Amino acid sequence: MQNKINALVKELFERLNISIDSINIDNSENPNIFTIKIKTTESWIVIGQNWKNLDAIQNILKIMSSKIIWERAKIHLEVNDYMKTKDDRLFDFIKKEIEYLEKTWKEIKLPFYSAYERKKIHWYVHQIENKWIFTKSKWEWRERRLYIYKEAPKLTIDIDWDDI
Image (cartoon, rainbow, N blue to C red; front, side, top):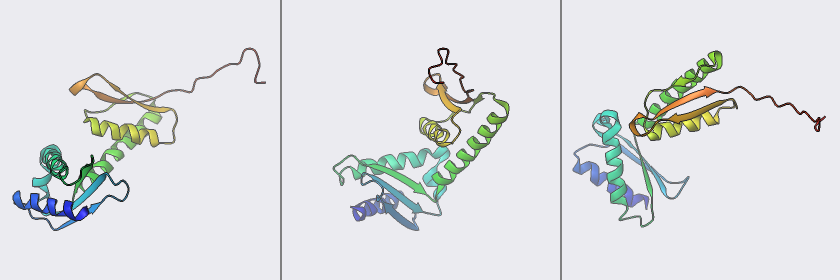
């Protein structure tokens, strides 16, 4: 299966007139998710502004691979580790915002992010060992924003002394 997808990727990039130095395809974690890592000197063309080209190429590969893979498969395209470094920068920013939140207790209003990035931020904050820090999304559609806030522990008093 990987050989067929490899040939598909090579054919697509040849037709786009973009040279590729190396291709690595991996689906060891999940057989329905193919991570395609390519190295190229023309990454700026593949990624595009606000990674729109990367998203479009990924969708084209998904459509093309649907003829080879009869099941529903996901294609994740990684160019020169761009998405990994982008995620690292995002998580570093969120980590600094959380540190600020822990000092000030002020709710943090994050800039606009795509739904995919908001999902990553929700996941990242959930992974933190602080059980008082939460995320929430407000508003709708393009106006949707993510907030990080800290909630004080709620004290409960056992009036009838059952636990004592």
